[in-house]
Length: 118
Image 1 (cartoon, helix red, strand yellow):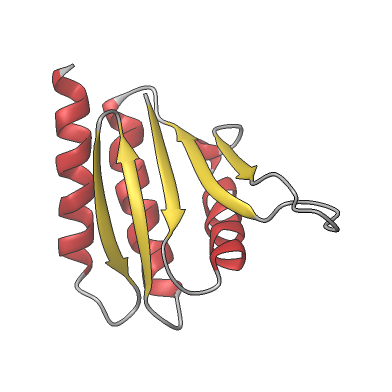
Image 2 (tube, rainbow, N blue to C red):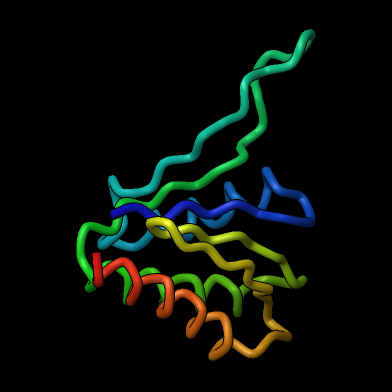
């Protein structure tokens, strides 16, 4: 099972790259994080990052993702809205140092719980 994460607002490319780097620092997520770029437009050398995919595999990895998203959110200077998709369910979550982390963590847990039912 994979989690797909998109940044909805703000500097999408910068925020996705920062989240990917944050996750890759964790031993649990090394080799499980892939940034996907959009196709380049005419005159561009490369496309911008638009999607982050995290290979979860087990519910234990889902719990680790919840913790890592929470710690990443706490490290942000500004709030960022992300779109998380796991399986056929998705949620938009506002994350940031000024936000209630419990609400964001609960949204990801609900997505993971649904994925475990399949």
